[in-house]
Length: 170
Ligand code: ADP
Ligand code: MG
Image (tube, rainbow, N blue to C red; front, side, top):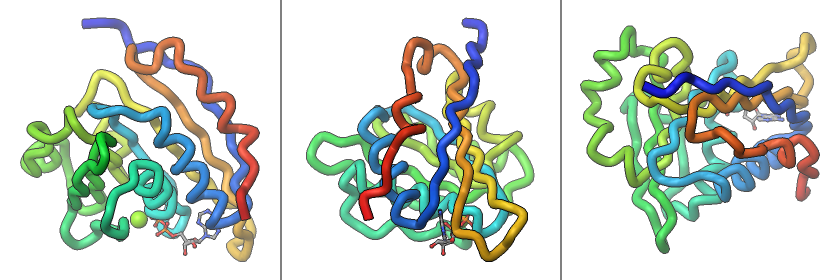
């Protein structure tokens, strides 16, 4: 198959919850059916908050809430936008369990976001966007640093650098 193309991460400073929503929303305008996002970062980092922003950008009709207990939530596409498949892989031990969720049939027409997917979800797709969300040493801080790492042929020639200068809309 094609060699994996791995570009340098785009670093985004995200000061507030609203700014995280905005980041996901603006990123969504670049996304298309079949895209896979592998979101990582500790509990409370903002993976679900970021996914809510993607849901806003895709105009999904239901609120995007954490699929912690159901493992996967599917949001239908609206108005020609791709749908959203939102997976929480925290309690999944392997790629096999992820594949058991039967994502394949709908993935081509949806954006798939896998929280806690690092080390598992990359094998789902030849290309994916890694989204690493870091907190500061101070647990009181709202500020997050997000690293967007595009991997694979789908992202070749796609410049996400504009996201690093995103200004919060609040
Ligand atoms: P995760 O899915 O990574 O466990 P959540 O998105 O569920 O994290 O929770 C993140 C929490 O942190 C939310 O309550 C959110 O409002 C809050 N928060 C504060 N500042 C930020 C920020 N800059 N980015 C994202 N979330 C933030
Ligand atoms: Mg979450």
